[in-house]
Length: 259
Image (cartoon, rainbow, N blue to C red; front, side, top):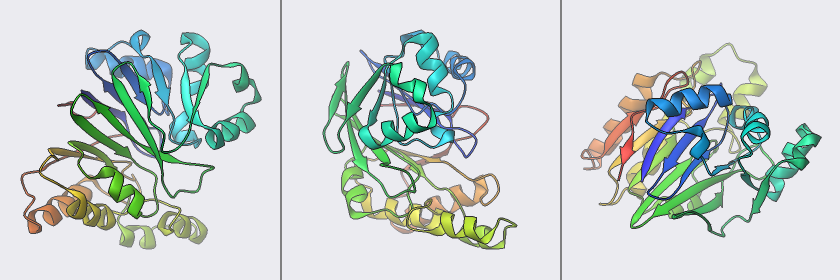
């Protein structure tokens, strides 16, 4: 399996997952043209993408989806709540290719088994995904206010994780953002802080975990060095310093994980 985060942040999110017999995207929060350009950088082709799996309806995860479906006829997978929300945003989306999944019920695309699971976020029915190919298990989860027991259970045993490390709590409090927005970010339906992400990692990391990509890093209420430093320090204190920690970016692709 290959994982590359093509874009991650409040301006757009899109992750490539490839295997011997499948190629999918998780979310489509950048334009089809930009997605194609970034896929080319890793030797992949937009025309080979078999599906887009949607975590939730927010603009930074779906803004490029409609154009992609209309032009390239690529099917999108979403649960009923997310699909309903997207239909409210764009009634014309009903005529596009959709497959509805149920949370907790794995579905198959090529040789990829994909299991959606519920996460707490201020959307209709947001999810994270477990993706399996052969003996490799990968977890992809962002946009969650807290790391629930369900999330922790699902992510145990992963070989690789794409995990939200959205903000530094003090930077949120000190920012010029309106108080209601600060409350949203810090709430149980908001986003996961650096500290909470690091704490969860130390609990769920097993001998299988090779690498973590820190994702959805805020450009206003976080810094890449803060997110990276807090995670590495926490893992080191827990005797897990062998786990590689990498960054993701809004304006360029991440490195590629292969496993």
